Image (cartoon, rainbow, N blue to C red; front, side, top):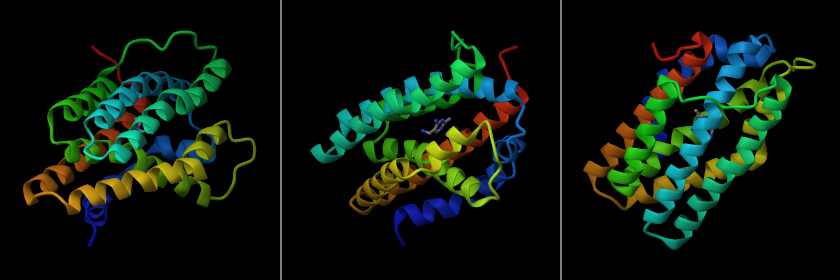
Amino acid sequence: MKWSEQAWQQITPVYQSILSMPFITGLTNGTLEREKFRFYMMQDSGYLDHFGRALALIGARATHIGDALTFMRFAENAILVENSLHESYFVDFGVTQKGPLQPACHHYVHFLKSTAALEAVEVAMAAVLPCFWIYKAVGDYILQQPHVAANPYQRWIDTYGGEDFGLAVQQAISICDRMAAQTTDAIRQAMTHAFVTASRLEYDFWDAAYTLRTWP
Ligand SMILES: Cc1ncc(CN)c(N)n1
């Protein structure tokens, strides 16, 4: 079994919990309160700035030059392409400032950046994989549900359920599988651990947006 298959098995309970979160149900049927989506978008925009830097750092540390280029492209896409989706929503919501990172986002980006800087590069690659794979899976899941006319969140759904994002996800998975196949058992285990931790932080990110969780 490929590393990615067993890693996904490990996060199946977390992924199932994500699908039944009220935030995801609200995105699917378009009923999510604007205030919660606005909070999510503002946090996510900050998230993408740091996520992009983590990806660039992994690119710089990649063993193979082809993987370095791929991660640098991922970084560029996170900062430019994904963030342009957010900016289009900022116009709708009249947002002019992203505001500070709140606890869930702060925790997640610092986990990604410290892992990217200090762990084996294979582990760093596994840590960022849920950011690709879970979003694609959630986007695809929503697209399979009955279509809701004039869903205000359709642009978000189309971005993550779309083909371009799917291509990047396939690349990220296959790099992780190749790296996992060439490394030691200890590093493979650390990869799985990082993958599970990031998946939990994905859950927490949506939960924090739904509950509008801020610093005390
Ligand atoms: C928190 C989070 N995780 C993942 C993605 C998709 N790159 C995102 N935009 N935001």
